[in-house]
Figure 1 (cartoon, rainbow, N blue to C red):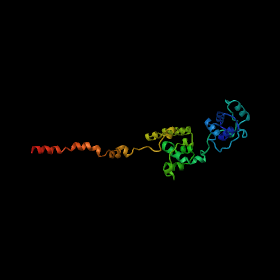
Figure 2 (figure 1 turned 135 degrees about the horizontal axis):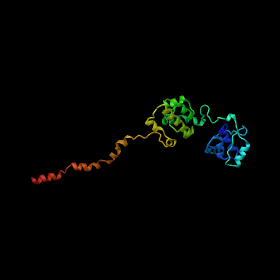
Figure 3 (figure 1 turned 45 degrees about the vertical axis):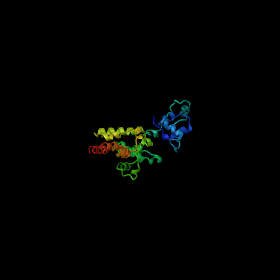
Figure 4 (figure 1 turned 90 degrees about the horizontal axis):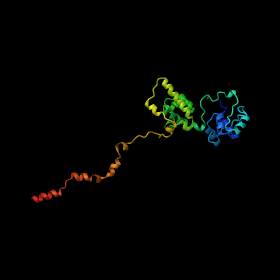
Length: 247
């Protein structure tokens, strides 16, 4: 089933103006049930104005009435030629203003952990331009020293399913082209759960861990070597007394 025009705005209107369940709204708008619950809680789609599907000839009032009476009823979208193919994205992904500052961190994460992704694929995932990706890839970005890699899924810039699809497509393309991934590239293919638990930088052992702590040796003091000194220093007094007796 095709999604209604302005699906998220339609979901906002249905949550605010009907008693439909989250599942009914999610199925009608092509969204996840938790996303609709987030709209109701005010955590998602903040500032989005509701879009009336009845006034815009996408839904009949009778459908809403049936849905409110039967929680298992699935709303039926009215045929609208303009809504056909709406689920297909046209042009670059729109990124909210509040998240645009997070894009460099997401780009750096993708470049670091998914080197098989092309600049075009990265641009579609996080909604950015190829010059920005190239600047981060070549470390010529004006703020590169202050950018830390962060998973774009954790930042809300794309969905895990979209990232997985892009990675799988890139791997298949490289395999078709006869390009074999290196061991280093395979190690960089990590999941979202793994990336969220990663330390910012790999921990490298320092000199104290490799060669031991000099401070521990200093703490021993001269008393620890007293036995060795007494072992090598033979008693002199007794020997002199024996010589005197012989005299």
